[in-house]
Amino acid sequence: MRITVAGCGRWGSFIAWYLCRIGHAVTLYGRPESRNMQRFLAERRNDYLTLQPELALSTDRACVAGCDVLVISVGSQSLAGLLEELRPCGAAGKKIVLCMKGLEVSTGRRLSQVVADAYGETCPVAVWLGPGHVQEFVRGVPNCMVIDSQSTALQEELIGAFAGDLIRFYYGRDLLGNEIGAAAKNVIGIAAGVLDGLGLTTLKGALMSRGTREIARLISAMGGNELSAYGLCHLGDYEATVFSPHSRNRRFGEAFVQGEPFTKLAEGYYTAAALMELGQRWKVELPICAAVYAMLYENAEPQGEIDRLFTRSLKQEF
Image 1 (cartoon, helix red, strand yellow):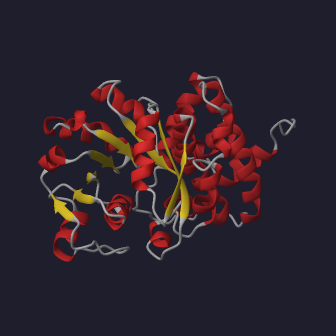
Image 2 (cartoon, rainbow, N blue to C red):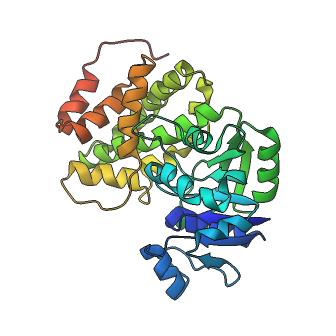
């Protein structure tokens, strides 16, 4: 299978490395001004991995024209712009796989919706989601992930082509729920970092349980299956997000509460704002997400937000 991976950051470069490792003809595309791509062109490596000699590198967007599958791994807020950039290269006629987690903050759209709005409802699109860190995969530590799509045929093709010794894929059956759950887990990751920064790490169990519950309510209100929140794309990704030292969202939350600078992309920052809009639209209360939003966007005092969560009215667990 001929695959172009658009996006040469930490995750995109891993996806290219992995797909090349299992035998596909892979091209990794990045803009000429990208520092990540400049380093790959000079050294064929980044801080996490070394690319195989047979893996092609390109700064010419025309490389998309020759692929069977276009895998995209960029910041969620950049997706719409990238789709327009790649349109002249025939990207709208490709099978598209989104290896990214987030929501478009200005509209609340899921990322598969961004593709459908750009390229039409008939454009075959799938999402590749679930737990795992590049640092663990390249050490040979396997994990389980999900591919979901409105097209069962596309799912079957991709899972058959992408399965390998490092990743066991499951068939997703709720595109909406898996996308919302995958995006929302980054907000829970920020909350976990806040707890670490405040010395309240033992509250992470409650955070995981109640965080999953509020996201399940949102998924259900939006028309998805609330059980998706308990699957690999949300609860199943918590270990990699809530506890891992590699998690950028957790590290961002910890740095935020301690007043330290953090320059890496933390998708949960944007997702918190998008979830507030969705919660209002679908009339779902999201207390943990609201607390994170208040800290990030309204300068709310973190300890005060934790106290506010504890003084909410008493209620049944389920």
